[in-house]
Image (cartoon, rainbow, N blue to C red; front, top):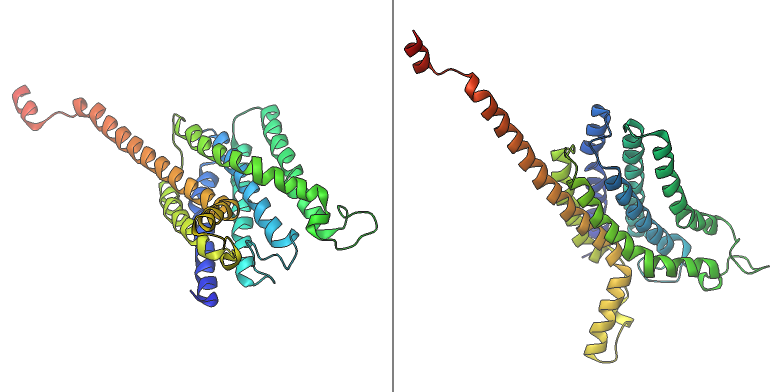
Amino acid sequence: MSQILLTTFSLIVTFLVLASFIPQVRHAWLRKEGGRVSLNYLQLNLICSTESLFLAFFFTVNTDEDVPFWAHAPRIALDWVNLAQFVGIWILFNFLFVLVVYYSAISRTHKAKRIALYVLFLIISLVPLMIDATTDLFCPSGEVDCTVTRRDPIEFLMALHAGILQPVTHALMVLSFYEQARQRTLDLSATGLKLQSSIFFVSAILWTFRLHIPWEIIGTETPLTSFCTRCIIWFQYVKFSAGADIIFAIGQCILLRLTLRKSHFEATHTATERQPLLESPQESIENV
């Protein structure tokens, strides 16, 4: 697939992914009621999107320009489109989270605790990356524009996220759908669920082609070691993007199924309750 064609497809998918949030945002905005959407569902997905943005930002901005993993060396338009998708998803989840927290009936103390928890996660994720991208604070004393291997705090932070926090956030994303499914009222936009379950599935497949992994220099010893090495590399560099999208797509699909089934049950139950109140024409004639 040519680079121009791949970049075009990526732009279209990024636009569709971000547009798929519009029904959910509009639904929450018009209803002005946060109690029917699980705050755990939104906050856990927000944390997962923050973690994905951390990794994408690190590979695109914080790593050295000559490192050809995940992003190209030097960076090309496709790399910035990929990063833009993570940034857009993160912004929209933030907006949804703030909207639902604002309209939620929970106490101010509870709201403050949830916001504080998220701010704490930002402090150990995006905040250090932003500082590292704009200053030389993490370089050894006296050095300027040092390589990432010389910035020990950032290397440690990356190892912490890639090795521990990233798998944990994927597990939290799975938990988030359980938290929303157990709500008595599944107050989510069915249109939004349909769009997100389909578009995020397409996005998950496309990530394999959008990310730059120099396979030609990886695992050339034997076919077995080459295959194992490729699996490890794919797991490290592609899984956090493709994996998050496929989990989200499946989760939204399950919530869509539950929402439609609940709507059908409520409609049938309402019709059954009204039936005895309706007198048939034959009964009217007999009464006369």
